[in-house]
Length: 384
Image (cartoon, rainbow, N blue to C red):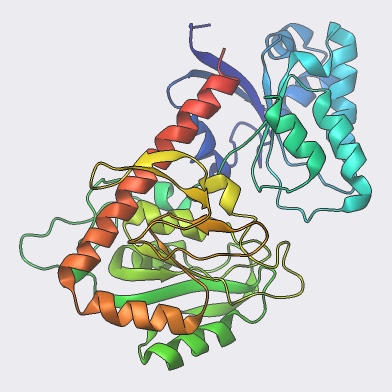
C-alpha cells in the first residue's frame, strides 16, 4: 500500500456498494487524500464464513485496518462484533490492531457508560460522530485514543448532479451540486427555507416554523413531512438549499444534523435557534454541538479566531451564553437564543446587501477551514 493509505471495512447497505449517506463525507472527503482499499462487511463476512476464502480476507485482518460500524448502544457487543472476534481469533489479531469509526445516532444510556468505555479502550483508536459529554470519553479523548468528527454533508449534495434555475439572472452560471459556484444572496429567490420530517425526534417542527413566520412576518419555503428520516424529494431539498438565503435548522434529537452542513456546503446561511427544545432532546441546549466547533480558524479580516470560547464572546457574531460553564459560540452562522433575536437580526441583514454577502462569505470561509481541519485530523488518525 502507498505511504498514505487506508484499508477499511464498511458496513454497506448491500454487497459491493457502500452507504453513500456517510461515505460522501467520510471516505470521499475526509479520507480523500489517502489511497483507499475498501470491502463491504457483508462481502468480507461471506468470504470468511460461507466460502472459507481466508486469503481474500487476510489483507483486511492486517494491523491498521479501519472498521466502519453502526453499533447499537444497548448492545455494543452485537453480532457484528461477535463475527469480527471470530475472524480475529482465526488470524491471531486483537482489537488493538484495528481502528473503529463508530457512526451512531443512538441516545446516550448512562447504564451502558462503563460498557462503552471498556469497549472503546480495546481499540487502537476510535473516531465517532455525535459528541457525548461523559467523563470517560473525555479521558479517552485527552489520551488521543478517541476523536470526534462532524456529521458533515449528506449524500443528497453529492449524488444529485444538476440543479436548474428557470429564472436565473443574466450572468449567473448554472449551479451544479458538485460545483464550487455558489449564488450570492441577492440571486436567491427564497428568504428562508426548511424541508424535513416530523419523525426525527421532534414532532413540533411545524409549530416552530409557524412561530418564526409569525415573528418575522416572512414566509418559510418548504414543509414538514409526516414520515420518517430521509423520506421525500432529495432534489427539492437540495434545490431549496441553493435558492435560499437562510436555511432554518430545527433539531430532531440532536442539535447537530446533516442539514447544518448541507446548508454550509451550498452557501445557505444556517439558522439555529436555541429556544426550541423538547424533553426528549439529547441535550437541552446546544452544548452537544459546541465541542465539534472547537478549532482555530482565520476570519475574513485575517484575524485568528477560536470557534468556542469561555468568557466574553467576540463581536460581529451572534455570541451567547448557553449556560453550563459560560461557553460562547463564535461560529459565523446565525446561532441565537430566541425567535425574537432572529427576527431583529433578519431585518438588519435583509436591509443591508453588503452585510448579508459578508455573512455568507464568512460562513463559506469558516466551513472551508473546518472541513480542512477535520480532513487533516481524520487522515492523520486513520491513514497509515
